[in-house]
Image (tube, rainbow, N blue to C red; front, side):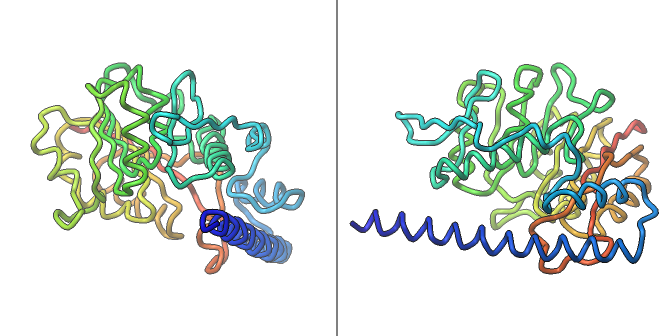
Length: 298
């Protein structure tokens, strides 16, 4: 009986959260359309986003590329031996948190597919900026490890940095077939060391083979990660895919950082709405999503 009551409470709470978020999205959508009706955007990317939004509900990304993905079509299984939910990705199991139900996994995986679509502003790679065979990857803030899993065959080694214990459990299951070339570091990456935090400079000082590619998505702590890897930036040419949407000013701040440190860099095409900040959203509303930076000065 207690389990049944708990399940009902979870479903009621989930539906209420979904309902209130949808109402918030409707209000924000109308706010954005009203603002740009009075202040027509000059930037082409925002013009295109507003045009798309005028005929669609508020979503994270803007463009028809996302319309080919549907959460209801995602097949979710449970591994009987360990009790974790998973989906199949190119013949490989991608595990999710033990606490995730089927619908949550469907929504999460569908969002991953959308954000890593080749036309998405969140996609970490492109034909001119990609992971090459036998490169070393540092996946900083890897969560479920989807990006790393997509490239396992090419990677010489991958370092997965993730501080959430539930995600760590899922990562251990996902990457068990590649134990010899996967290191899972259960710590929060920043510019500090100790109390669950670690800097990349501190971690990799004990590893002679440094990463070639850094993917950094740490829920707003990207600046601290960069400050904590300054020595690494000078040791060898590297590629960095860095998220720039967690704070409105991040794109400008990180662009200056890479310029000052001798990197060539460019933003991904397109813009997005940061759904976690709808309560404080303000013009220009849309944010650049990702910077791709390359150092060739070493």
